[in-house]
Image (cartoon, one colour):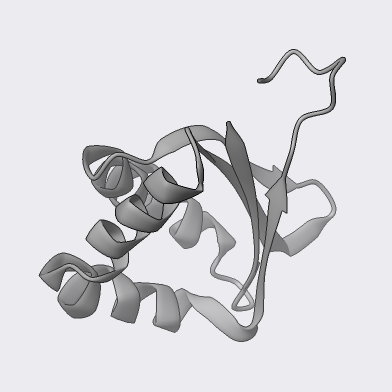
Length: 106
């Protein structure tokens, strides 16, 4: 498995709206395209931070699923612009994670 840690900086005062958008719209959309959502999180004490983790069987699946998500008309017309309104453009960080041998995640 490949895990992807996605960390976002949210526009001031928009965290609650962003969480609702993610939970009700974006995460179900991505799951429908084949994304496995491991979890989504806010950071206590930091009202501008949102973190979530996605999982993929391998890099080939990750590439395919990302193309289906980010190459879709729904992303271009609906989800991408909404993310742009709620997130700070420079506040996106994506890290690929590999579980250690002792991890319960594989």
